[in-house]
Length: 352
Length: 244
Image (cartoon, rainbow over all chains, first blue to last red; front, side, top):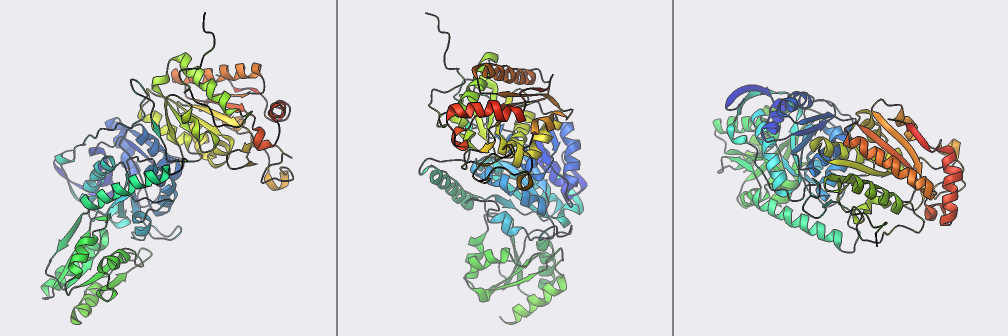
C-alpha cells in the first residue's frame, strides 16, 4: 500500500495511519460519525497480526487501551463526542500513570446526544484536560484526509516520546469526506525504548504502574514531573500554519473551519484585502507565541469555529486586547458560511 | 534442619497495612504461593483494584498495575491480548467487581478472556469507611444502611458468581472462604486451579473468596470469621459453581 495515492475517507486514512505507525491494538465502540475507523481496524488488525476488540462500552475500550499500553503496545481507541466524554476517566488515568495512547475524536454536534454532523464543540474538553486532575493531552487538529493519516501516525511518536495520551481532534466532516491520500514511506513506525513496560520481572525488579500516591508530597512530585514535561512539550511541539504574514486581518481557524477560512482568505486576497490565515495544528500546546507576536502589530484577529466560541478564548489570552479579536461561529453541526465570513472580514478591515 | 514454611518469593518482605483480622493478607499469600508453585513469578502481571487492595503491589513481588475502579477486567484484556505469554490476573473487591465494574467482568467472562480473577467478597466497601456493597447481606448494618440493608430500598445481595457462571465463556467459577484453616487450604486449591487453567489457555476463570472485614463490620476478628461461616456462606454457598 506504500507510496500510492488512494481515495480514502478521513476515517479510513486515520486508521491506516495508525497501522503504518505500528499501532497493533485497537478497542472501540460503535458511534457515528467514526464507525469507519473500527470497521477498518477490524479488517486490518487481522492482516497485520494486531488486536481488534469491539468493547462493551467506551469505558471498557479506553481501559483495554490502558492495558495494552501497560504491556508496551502502540494502542488506540476512537469515538465521537458522547463516547469521548465516557473515556475521560481513562484518559485521566493514562495521564496519571504516564502511559502513551492515541485517542481519536471525530467530533459531532452537542451537548448531550446532539447530532451526527461535524462540529468543533469539544475543544475545551480536549485541550483543557477533560478528565479530573492537572493534566493535558497533546491535541492535533487535522484538516484533510491526508492529515488524518499523517497526524494519527505522528500521534504515536508523540505519545511514546512524552508518555502521554495524544488526542486527534477531527470532526464528522473530515471523517466522512473522501480525498486522495498519499500513503508515504516515511510513516514507518519509530521505536522508543520503553523501560517501564510490564512484561514480567525476568532479570529485573518488579515494576509498578500507578497513579495513586498517598505519601505526603508524593503526588505533588508526580504533578511537578508532569508539568515540567508539559513545559517541554510547549517548547518543542507547537505546530501551526500561517498564510500571508503581512496581513492586517488574520483569520484564525483549525480543522474543517480552517478549510473554509482558507477559501475566504483567498477570496479576500483576490479582492485586494490584506487578509491572512493562522491555522493551529496543535491545539494543545496552543500556538500562542506567534499570535502574541503578531498582536503587537496593528493587525486584528478573526476567529472562526464550528462552536459557540472555545478556541477564541485561547486567542484572546494570547492577544490580550479584546478589541483586536472578533468571533464567528456556528453550533450544533452548522457550517460557517464563506460569504458571511468574507463580509464580516471586510467590515473588520474597513475599520483599520 | 529442613525449612518447611517460608515466605513465598512472590511476596515481598513487608508488613501489610491491612487491619487486624482482614482477609486480604491471607488471599495475597495464597496467590503468591500459587504463583511460586507454578514458577511463573517472572511472567505474571497482577492488576490491583481501587479499594484496600490497591496497595497489593507493596506486597506482591512481581509486576503490578493499578486500574480505574471496576475496570480491571478491561485492563487485563488489553495486557493479555497484547502479550498472551504473560499470566494475567485481576484482584478485585465486591464494589469493584459487582457494582461499578459489572459490565467489564461480565463481558470479559463472555469473551472468555484467558485471565484469572480473584474476587474478594467481604460484603462491604472497606476503604471508604464501610458503606453498603452490592454483596452486603439483607439486614446488615453499614455506613449507608444504618438500620440494616433493606430489600425495598437497597435490593438483593448480588450473587454475581452465579450470574457469570451461566455464561458459556466462563470456564471455571468457584466460591471459597477464609473462615478456617481447612477452608483456606481449599481456597488455595481453587486459586491454583484457576491459574492452572490460564496456563493451559482454557479461558476465563474466577474464584470468589468470602473474606472477613472485622473493622468494616464493627466486630472482633474471631466474630468476623464466625459471621463469614454462618451468615455469608449460607447466602453465598461455598463450592464449585461451574466446574471445568
